[in-house]
Image (cartoon, rainbow, N blue to C red):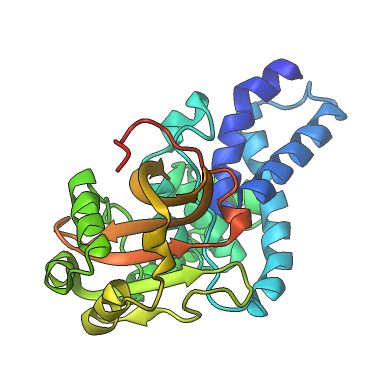
Length: 298
């Protein structure tokens, strides 16, 4: 059992995290699945990897259904929890790709739990519809319809807020230029960096914290927020560093070594402009962020 756990825990977590967007919940789903597996007869399991995927997916579906009502009463916008580079371990490297990007996780929030499960299993893990049907308890034809519906939902969302999978990668150079404009209150520099329809979303943890409660859209409004000397001025008072979150460069703000905020960006299709900005200030979603040496400290 220990060998199975070491072999598949990273794989199980990579599914659970994409399904739930919360590290602690993903870990709970994985632990519960392996606890059940430990107490059952495993001699009849022909494909242990598919069994692990099915077990963790079913637990995630249950958790998503119960979480939806809590998020409806959440103050402000709810954003997924970012993960530091390598959090899910080297055994999950094959599952990293675009489906781990922060923008992709935000995108998935538009789907129902079942749509999310089918889409993740198909898009991120390349399972065929027959296998997915067995995992989510639907027919193969129904899974095809669910996947098609999920893709339509994501494709019809305004591109200004929900980028398509495969786009949105932020380069180190783009992040450094953004940081320079942000710290200098540089209106002209910020306008040069922002895309045509940028969106700024902040998550303060469901409480009345010092951040915006609703998404700000448009170049004028987003630029005004990012260059204001009154709004979010505290971010400039904190130390800012570069780190890797969800496989991409991000801006991390700390006070005496404690992470107080993280800013994840996504680029437009050209990769030259910033399309989406996600500001995380919920302490619960920042506690696991580490400061790897991939990018230089500023």
